[in-house]
Image 1 (spheres, helix red, strand yellow):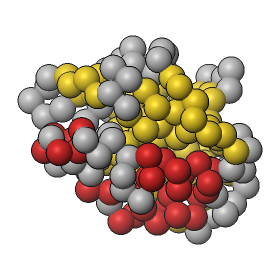
Image 2 (cartoon, rainbow, N blue to C red; image 1 turned 60 degrees about the vertical axis):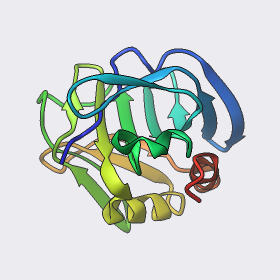
Image 3 (cartoon, rainbow, N blue to C red; image 1 turned 120 degrees about the vertical axis):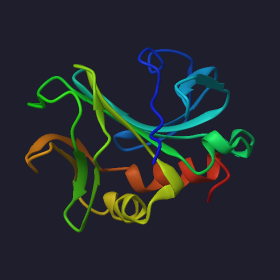
Image 4 (cartoon, one colour; image 1 turned 180 degrees about the horizontal axis):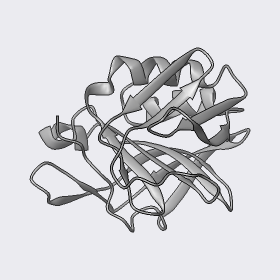
Length: 173
């Protein structure tokens, strides 16, 4: 499996908020670079991004729009990036997980750069899909480290509505 990663500086600029609900917002992002197989980067216009962002942490889910998904390197990928100033995540390459009370997802190829955990999930894996489906039904979306310890918690209020619009934005819903 090839994991696609965001370039390290891509999350900071060019956000156009199109919807918000509770603690979550939906953005369209132009000119975002993502790492694709072979180690090169591709720019995507109109990237669809569901995000919780605060001064100390963020949880972001991104999908390429339908037009970009025609490129094989981007087809059916969802990218995930997690940041938190308070976590205790020491390994640079290790498993990272997302969890809600009824579902969980673990990505063994997660990358940690001292600031963010980032991973790409190919083919909308069923286990991530189940997590996304249930994430809005509980109070928090938790991030787990490679030992299964909760290292960050994110509010889930508004997530279900923003998630549905994320998939519609990308032409996947």
